Amino acid sequence: MDQKKLKLKYVKYCALNLTHNCNLRCTYCYTGPKINKTMQRTTAFKAIDFLAGGGASSPCTVTFFGGEPLIEFTLLKEIVLYSVKTYGQKIIFRLSTNGTSLSPDIIQFSKQYDIVFALSIDGHKEQHDHCRCLASGIGSYNDIEKNIPLIFSFNPYTIAVSVVVPETAHMLARGVMHLFNMGFRYVLQTIDYSGSWNSQHIKVLKGRYNILADYYAEAISRDKKIYYSPFDERIKTWAQKPYGNGDLCDLANTQIAIAPSGRIYPCVQFIGSDEDSYLENTIGDVYKGFIKKRREEFVLLNYREKTSCLGCDLNGRCATFCGCINWRATGKLHTIPPIICEYERMLIAIVDALANKLWKKQIPLFKRKFYEKSFPVSLYIEDCVIKKGGKHI
Image 1 (tube, helix red, strand yellow):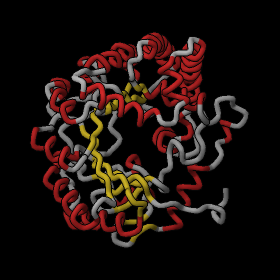
Image 2 (image 1 turned 90 degrees about the horizontal axis):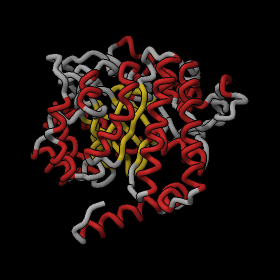
Image 3 (image 1 turned 180 degrees about the vertical axis):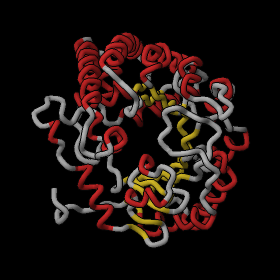
Image 4 (image 1 turned 120 degrees about the horizontal axis):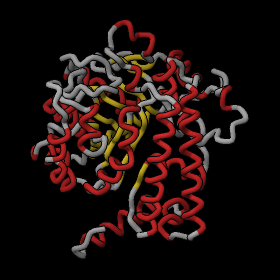
């Protein structure tokens, strides 16, 4: 695709980075140094004006991001109230949080304005505390665990976001099962692609994924409605369609990120410390709008055919269609580190064997989940009916 044929789209998803500050010091964090640098109220309102005033589709989903956005809960509330008062339902708000600062007041506000959030929790206590510590060096698991009942009382569908590093690879299966046993139904998990992975780590992961494949098959066979992204997303590329340009990652196009300074970046992973040295990553700002040429350059690089994928039978089925991952691991949007290819080949083989097993057994939930387009809606309706009857799935 060349620049003349490219047609930029309206923004659908925006990460609004409220602050660089955070009460945690996660070892794999990619958002730059934890400094007390916060978005100004005028900048935040201008960001909403930019999106609602024509820079984005309607509705546009804005996710509060950081650092830890709840450190700036007062600012967060002001943004939501301003947006609702000025633009009605043009903006839908979401939140990405480490969960340590949640309180009844925050939950009540979230409920009132339908702010669904994703919770960062890596697994069981040992796994989580290995990487996700408070600034004091103490693990943060206990601070999150005590808030789980409050979280589920607000939204039983809360997503658990988990990251696996080489040092916690051996804990993967036990950690995932722990999250499901806690009550999470959706576990979105990824490996830290910038970590120091080697073939031995991949071998360890293979053993743990095989354990999880048996767990997943047994759960689905019992009609237990769970979502595990390493399996579900790759089964979709087998049962429905492979990834195309923009399906998995559409940085600088339908998805963008806005830094505390008001600068616009292709994705949160490009913000860093948001200093002048990061200007080459920007595609505009909320005051002047997009720099069209810069935006097009990023989109074209992300859509560019990856030569290492040519002839690969897994082309379109793996995470190499995410330019953010490639950029973080190699510094280039279209350059894939070999370890990712090794990881994806290992994982997709396990996923395909799992899918074939469930298909051959004609497991009803498996067929509905991956072949029935209305499944997400029917699942929600079923949950509502069951809860009304005083039962829970």
